[in-house]
Length: 493
Image (cartoon, rainbow, N blue to C red):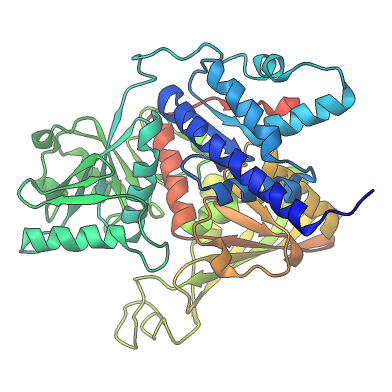
């Protein structure tokens, strides 16, 4: 067999680029016309570059052990366009792997269309032009800080494909000169030192007090408290108010939002106090009832650790454990030494590692009652602006080893109901900045896993800003009844 030449390798790369270019408009058409979100083993293909699409194909080899090229996936996407599909999330990567395996087992097997008619039968001929897939949900962001602006980015990104979440307004405190205030807020949305530039356009209308972001007009409401607002004055009704200020965390405080005309529910982007349900989407969202009008999306750390703790407890049983969080500094800390009501947090965040407490270990019990009283926790704030790590030091009821534990967690990250929450990386070279923008709640670092008998240590990276914001959006979609069928079904694996 002849060895590939330099020219042949480059020609193959160019050919793959050309195929990926053909894929982009087809993926966009499925998204905008059919409300079909095409993914590659959980990674969205919507609005992605040619290089990103090729990298996502390479990612399949890393986590599934199967070579996958655009030659394998483009025929599937072309056939999907012709099948008049109804709304769904369709994992093209998983379909391609299934088809390749089927072709090996049955060389004279079905063609692509026949294969898809079997795997996607539930949504074929499900598209009806002009017919809505559900009721739009008005959303208001109360506060426009780090999380508020990232929630805006994600909602605007998803607005083009029948997502049905409509960001109608943001509420901020008055700053005097409205025109100047709006320009500054638009600039903070447009440029971010951690997450990079916003992909799109932002227009400011000072007279109307609006920001138009990628064609989505967002009202800016100036108010010092919820009692100052009547949302119906802005044509907003039955809205979910997403409070990302952290000022109120109990039912009495958050209940102020529900007293506003036009507001229906309140969602807190911080741990709730008292009887407020703390929800980690993917784990205990089924506990939400129609009567629950105030909810908490818990904390970034709780969202990172609970899905992994859940699957570990299901498979091995967690007897006891300690959670140590190495957390990026936040706006709550001082840039340089100054007074702070919290212990140690008054010292410079940019110059020190700061040992502090975290409620994440105790908060686990609100999402996983079976682990109540089994975990302790502490946190160390470190001089990085984003991406944190949680170290799970566990005593298991069932013995295992590092290889088996990693194989199990890898499987959970690909072929389980927790695919959107658990990611998996197996590289000795990754560092925190590699996970900026990661949409999963937590990422297992396989190279760091330690397991010997009943003792295991699992290291989890997480983008405490963006990954958490994606979890909030998933929860927001759930309580707004914005849910899509996910295909292919895992039983087909």
